[in-house]
Image (cartoon, rainbow, N blue to C red; front, side, top):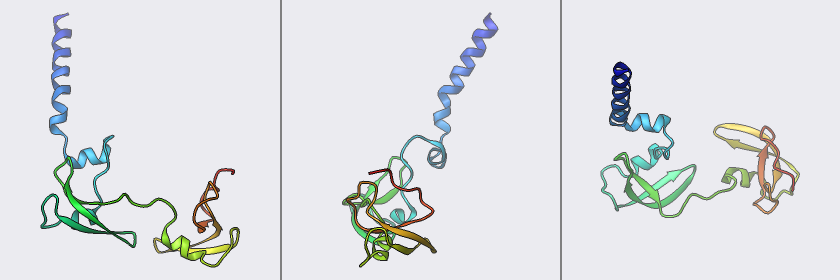
Length: 140
């Protein structure tokens, strides 16, 4: 019985020490916390201090922001306004001058995809090229 108590105490002590050995990379790879900032956000604050102004370019968009220290100590550019939701600009441009339901082609990530001009799941979004490989939007 005393051996069981000793083993339980050792296991509890080891479990209490495990967070001490966690690294930022390990937390980013398998944690429930937020993902680390993208490399572009980190580069935008290179040589700057927290609260300095920064310019972040992601996905063809440029945003003004402020350098902020993240919990793991990384300094990265936090956009002044959250990133927009919706179709990528390339998908919107692919349907310029077209009507909903027309066929289109859009280049995303270096791949040209055939698709259909669509206004999104609620039918109220911007007209944009939805690649055929994507699942159809929910019924309206």
